[in-house]
Amino acid sequence: VDLVQDILRGERRSVARAISLVEGQKPSAPQLLTALYPHTGRAHLIGVTGSPGTGKSTLVNQLALAFRRQEKQVGIIAVDPSSPFSGGALLGDRIRMRDLAGDPGIFMRSMATRGAMGGLSAATFDAVQVLDAAGYDVILIETVGVGQDEVEIARTAHTVIVIQVPGLGDDIQAIKAGLMEIADLFVVNKADREGADQAARTLEMMIELDGPRAQEWQIPVCKTVALDGTGVSDLIFCIQKHHSYLLDSGMLQDKERQRTQTWLHRALQQTLLMQFLERLESDALQTMLDRIVARKVAPYAALRELLDGVQASGQ
Ligand SMILES: Nc1nc2c(ncn2[C@@H]2O[C@H](COP(=O)(O)OP(=O)(O)OP(=O)(O)O)[C@@H](O)[C@H]2O)c(=O)[nH]1
Ligand SMILES: [Mg+2]
Image 1 (cartoon, rainbow, N blue to C red):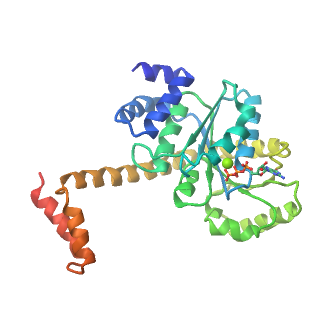
Image 2: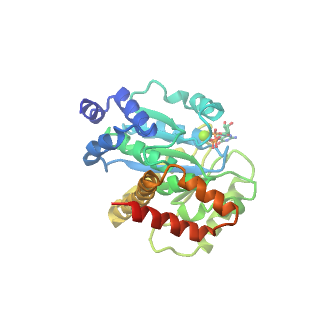
Image 3: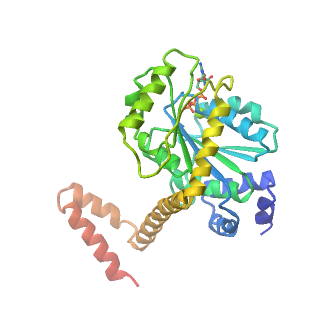
């Protein structure tokens, strides 16, 4: 209860502790998140995604500084699914984020492990709730736009920024990762390099080919040099325009609904699976696996048998 009050006041150590609780699947996490929930729903969630090394962290750093100049409180979650023990990426992020250190208006956190409901996306969802309740106006979520989990995390933001860099066959990059459909904004970062205009034109062409969407939002393509901040104020302008668009059109509500649905489905899957496994005899699953592999029973028949078995023993 004290922890809740401290989080709502934005007390940093409590915020950090709360995120550790949700990340570490502590039994107290659901109750904490339940208490925080009525105080959420104010933050603007911005997903920043793109292939490894495109400059996501550097750009997030710049965006955070720019939002700070507008007196906004900024939360940053860097989703790093690589092992926390490898340390490389984490260390890199910390070094790059050093401009932000010591600013009490910025809270930065790397997420690597699973959350209360077992997926990285659920853990991120929960951590975002904590930051939202703590009063952070803008929450930047950096994910590598590769695995499905990461794309899903980006998708659950209100405003999704997809970063590309010049060269490397920009068209293929975007389509391959399925990032085209989730982008609200494209950024061509490393615009100090050759081919940035070409990359931007390619993206603009792809957006046009993609045809008009249901929404009236026209996806902009911004060029930035995250290293020195060139183009960042234009990008901020586009981000805020998108936020206004979401608010005015009622799309923000739709997005909230969508991200909540994603969470709920995952939570149900996880919970039902756990409940099911609890009701199985301890070695029933292994025995069944052995029988399937030995071709004594077909997978679907095994499934039926497991389900029927639990039902018969249940209640
Ligand atoms: N030339 C140039 N280099 C940049 C720019 N932005 C970032 N870099 C460099 O690109 C490298 C990768 O930058 P990061 O910000 O770590 O990229 P990232 O996308 O966060 O990388 P991962 O999190 O590992 O996927 C670093 O060496 C940066 O200094 C830019 O605008 N121009
Ligand atoms: Mg990074």
